[in-house]
Length: 355
Image (cartoon, rainbow, N blue to C red; front, side, top):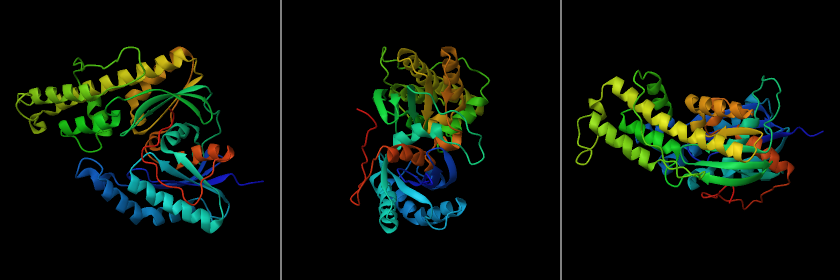
């Protein structure tokens, strides 16, 4: 009987991550070296800096993951799964180079994984001591919402997706980061805005929603513009003549603006996701990506799903952000399907999940 254990590597952006996952579900090790503090000074990710940090941390993270999994080197590992895209080219290449090398040295199958697919399959994961529970029922609607991507797919079956819609401009996570900066909040903006919004006492401000008719597409650029104008006005600056000055905003106004912005993002994401689930007869909704850690979004979609009589399956917050366990979960399905890569596997920065 095979071990069912995959070693998974994820370096698509700014997290150096290695995991050991059994049969696409049980996590035996999940190690991440985060670069959040490294990029905080610039308020965003610098690709060259991210790639160099991956080189620095790749081997220590690998060794720690093997130690936590109780593995002697790669003993008991059945295959190597690695993110091939989308992502930053330099970052992807660090993980791919390690995966190709390990696969060659240990004569193991090499399984390429789409990063977006990993975010969806994070919903299948179980922590080391977590009791077994049913897998998400298919067909399902999947929402991936992160710093670089926001889109809806119909998951007809394992590895079978139909893209329903996506952002036509900015991703939701990017909008959170930029508005967080406008409000003088720390990077990353998503958790900072969520924390500030919790303390809001006034919740009557309303920012615009870009519904785009009945489509499943999203748009957040207009919302960012509205937030910029509101911050400027609240700080006593003519929005047509000067830049907002967050230092002049009292904490209660920051909290009010943070709540209003978050509410606008959450309402559009939740409404379109639940509407798609109803339209396509989904048996469940799965959600992944860094913004999926937002509790207001989770609560809003869970309520809509409950009204349809279906579950929302969303991983714990630590598995919503980039990690290698999700690559192991998706990689197992691809491994079973016979997907293999050769020693010439290369980065695919613009890889899409579905047409």
